[in-house]
Length: 258
Image 1 (cartoon, rainbow, N blue to C red):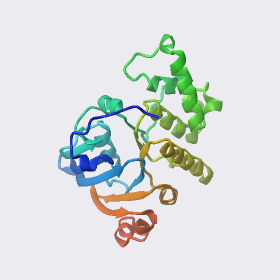
Image 2 (cartoon, one colour):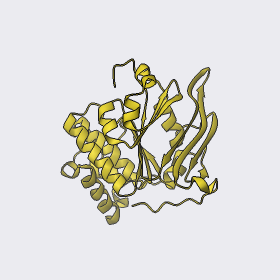
Image 3 (tube, rainbow, N blue to C red):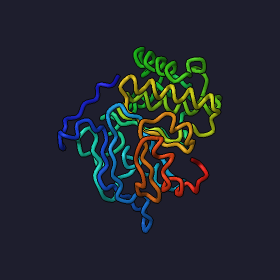
């Protein structure tokens, strides 16, 4: 697994927290998408991060992964203040994320897409395709269940395959912390179970995961703990069972999803 390391520079008592958000706020003009949000993610935990549409979940991921800087507040990764650092810097530290909107290179094979993710700072050509890069890409293909379609192009894959490729590309950066955005969207029950097995195996290998999804049943069966936000604010936190029975959470979802 990963060899990323960062020296703790903030409160050694929090050393077991892989990620910590302190009063993180993100505004877009007059709209507050994330409102003074604070929570922690523990080592080797699968944390569910849920909320209704427009709650601010993906925006929170954007702030944590360096896609956009927060307006206010602080983000700590393994004790280091990484607030506002760019995405490439955070990838090097061990943070990776997937996106709801897939952005593979359709003129490259599945294998080449995953190989490219291992070399984010180089212009990719077949001459760069070293044996060790290819070997690691094949291992990731097998890990995410794409070994049989490794030589196909992404546009030949079904939706479930595209989701797996998105995860594979994130794994190519060798993360310690994986932020997964809507991995169960559009999947069958069997495909959801296969994806959940994959995430469980990643955790067993030492990875920490934060998972957003609207499929409450698939998510609550997977995660150790849940953070619920609504209108950018945290409204509940606890075990899957506690969250499922929380009237505040049920009201936020209008009783329809839990």
